[in-house]
Length: 279
Image 1 (cartoon, rainbow, N blue to C red):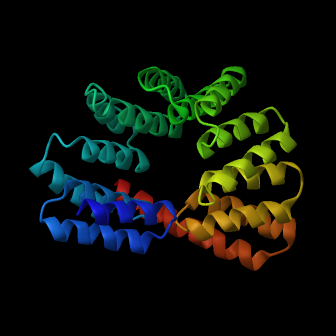
Image 2: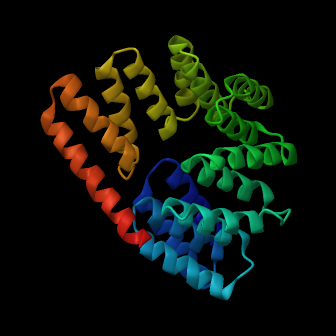
């Protein structure tokens, strides 16, 4: 079962979601009770907007294994995706007290808090600082950089991104963190250089394609912007907000009103799935 799950994880990283789902389902069938496979399958369901199925799977797993950390973290993420930020934060804060799962819970907490506004950003920053001090590596410093940037502090965001690169010069997340800082500072050439470094290391990094598209748009090069965002959506077609943003470029900027209609329709469908699941 762990071998099948590892294959599933690799497929998921490459956005081969049906392959990943099959591997996780087989890992569960092979062992009868394989909670890691259940958690990863729930994550794939949530990614595709199948929130009810993901919620049911996690509820059933937590009824059997109430202390299984990865399931509790995935439930926190799911609640955040459905807009229940307060409930998600409470669940993740509770598990962050467990040293084994603290960093993973803190990173999930940052993501949930960054989806909200106001004091959520400050809470995200506090969680990111704790994660980086508990495990000072490229991943946690990249997350910290993102939190500083959201809090309107590009200076500390850049320091954190460069620290992440010192920890691991081959970290795609660290190059992306620096790209976002340079984008915020209007250093668009520098931002594109870092996006390209990130994509050389990890061509499947959807947020890097997303940032790259935004930088091209800021340079007024909307054809390149659309190219990057289409590549991102080819990997992750369930990214509602990116469908919306692309729809606002294709027609108004490039005269492709058919494309605008298609992507706007997709955005509406995905948002409807999310709001229905939230109620």
